[in-house]
Image (cartoon, rainbow over all chains, first blue to last red; front, side, top):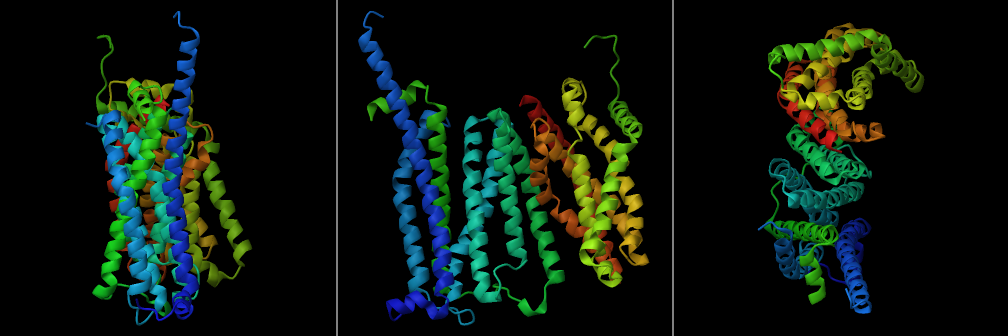
Length: 65
Length: 238
Length: 232
């Protein structure tokens, strides 16, 4: 580790604001970019599952078909 | 191969190990760049922004070529999967380009004293962002999504031919107008203690690119094939 | 195709398409005058916005003239294929037994002659108004002759891609402006170099190279884009 203390790491000789801001504006979009498609796929998946249950229950109600 | 059911199973297996690998590499690279690497003797600690700025820029540019390649495949062989790939790459590339631009601006403040400089590389990245936004907007504007994918393929191929010319012309333009006070080029030899975390981070961003594209494609495929029996079977078996 | 209709040679097909559009353009002088009027009015705006100081204007003149030329070319190109798409003649062209790229080039060259070349011919007048030194005027003309070829061809791609979209005008500028960046840089630098006593021939050569490359590749892109638009 290069920095002697946590506060030195935080300040980085006056450049801390820029460095930490850069990492924040990188990793926040990255996290959103990973999370959004996972959520979207899960929603689609659940929609399909719900559709199947609806079809199954309709079949169960009308066994004559 | 290349069929949606095969791709869905294959990409599922890939995502399962690529997701932890990517997150691990990103955290490792960030920790290395922030905590371990020594500061630059001219720029001090602000140079640590390089570990997010350069990988984002490199992968954003490579992403445009991936998109154009998928576009060419889609135009020539009419493979549906290539359309999905193209559609999945565009937003990832646009976000990475925007990240490179914003981190470049933040880096500019301690280095040049202003947030924005019409530097050759920043200007080229800005144009790349417009190219990505053009592809996304064109896709959204078409009603027929098959036609939309082919229109985007034509546009991204035209862009691919043009990108080297744009980069070269912007370089020359900048060289002609460069004010002497802000002669700043990072071309000097970089020490290996700084280079290794950078290479690691570039690798991590390539993994991130592949991962997000795969995730986007999977989400798109699930929706497109919601009526397909193979997918229904898969949902039932979970 | 019935046997009693003889096929035209490709050159004939091209020239018929060219003449058809050239006559249409000549028949509507306002379509040709509008971009020039736009150019004229924007040139009038610059001294009002930047102050009438002739020295300052003449320094900025190459860049200003080139940016306005780019915008006015963008404006006229956006409607290039609009009427053909609406009256269905584009569909006829697409199924005609001639290469669509060649037929489309007939139309684009007529369009360039009536708008791009005209703009280049008139541009020295606007150059004088903005205080461009006399030894820059001929380079302005040459750079715009070559440059409007590039601008028209790239604009034609944009028009072909957006012709089937209801409000495609704004989208078209997003698609086309980034692609036009090298043209703007080459053209503007050629004029600046001539004004400052340098050698503009490198930049004119680059512009010419870009124009030749575009002439070879862009027709393929336009015809592909038009076929896509017809499917939408």
